Length: 193
Image (cartoon, rainbow, N blue to C red; front, top):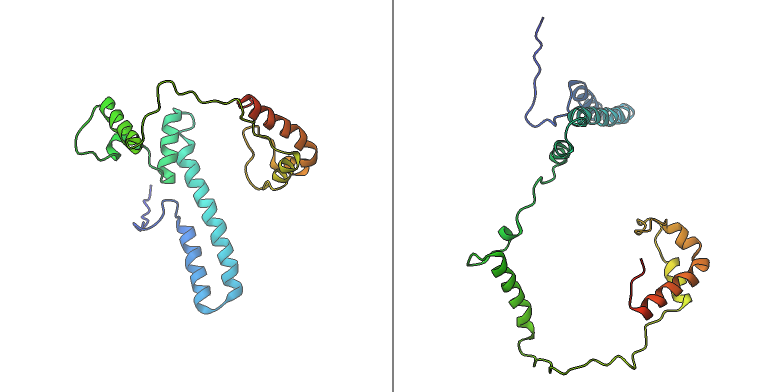
């Protein structure tokens, strides 16, 4: 069987093919000659071929891993996309002069938070916070309706997966119900489920 030699440049992307290189050279030649029509035609061809080559390369690279372990598949996908595969340990990111155990590290962090309050006098043991004359927070329907109208429909929906365009389009209908939910939540000091 005859062998065929091919040249591979170290700067080439892994999905680069000889056909794509030939199209790029033709495109550059048309540009240098000032042939705008041919340049635009070849530019579009190069872009289509580049997308096709990338798709074929990534499909070949990851496609055979679909039947293997999901861990291997994800590792290859992350490596191809340039993501860092492992997260560094949090302890290695914190620079302390001395080595601490987990408990010692927790105590040092706790001391840092407590140091902010060291100049304040401690509360007396019999301190009681009175909530007798506190009024619960409440909001009006007009405020809720105004906020619903201001929702951007291009943003992702919330955890309820209700599209934002529904909230915006039907804000006048939904405002009373949502207002009641919010006000009940404020009164009971509980977040609705």
